Image 1 (cartoon, rainbow, N blue to C red):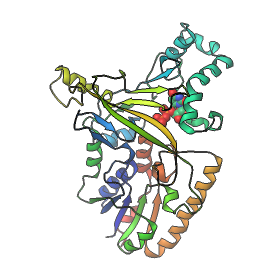
Image 2 (image 1 turned 90 degrees about the vertical axis):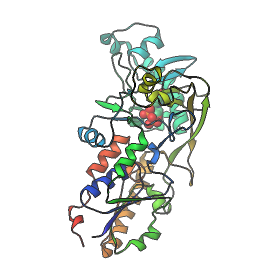
Image 3 (image 1 turned 60 degrees about the vertical axis):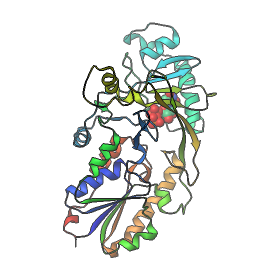
Length: 381
Ligand code: UDP
């Protein structure tokens, strides 16, 4: 039976690899980086025991029951609930846009029924200017008016005191770390993994005859050597340091809304494992302390940067122009499949980078769970 190649070992690729293996296929995972996990990859710092999110904070959250069920086959989740604070003009507020923020910002004490009438156009604009204009300008390198409104709408609006950053039913951090989640996803006798090996269309010929499908989740423009030009991406630069204090900012993420502050946020990763604090204090005897016993902390400052070919792409910049360019690359996928058909091969491109979509982890997993893997695959010669 022919093999399947999964190129890219992020959430999308690892989920597909697992599904394919469980459907009876032999899967070769190719990952161009030295390790699996894509941009959700974390590493436990040997000095402190803190789990560092190497590409910025990743919190697993979903209201998709199928995703939640699938993910929990491979990890338990701790009880972490994500809260985001935002610093602006020397004061700290709780996101999202709700009573806690509005009451502090305007110095009032509104109850839920008062909020709608209180938030006049003018006051909404004041809030937008204070908390979204500077941050969005830094994050996207363009005026907020030209950013797709769905991006800013990711931050919920609520008429209550709920400061949970997500509206999802379920959330948490893998209880024994992100690394184990990815390892378990790929831990199947029918899956083999080769890191430091990139897939490209130039080397696709070597698989002809032995491979039926390629599932690729790298950047779609890179796959085609940027032949129509690069898609616009936004990149990030991280500055990480270990500090000799037990707790630097008292929470996992603080956003910096002022335009003058060059970074957008500071991540303090040990807060993603509140159970580690209980372990360090002796309140529980099981599990790791996740850095809480070290007396030190690890923080990362996040700086958005203009992406250039060769940089890591993090965010698609979705607008009309990029949608047109993406559509041209999608046509190329169809053209490749025209050629591949003679060899009995098929190319599927997806994931955050392949699909050029602002996916959260659960959306990437949902997409991989729904991607057509070909029921004929198992019997295709
Ligand atoms: N945003 C903002 N101020 C904030 C938080 C978010 O202006 O304090 C805007 C910004 O444009 C950002 C978008 O809302 O890109 C989505 O925020 P989210 O926290 O979901 O971004 P992510 O964690 O995916 O980078």
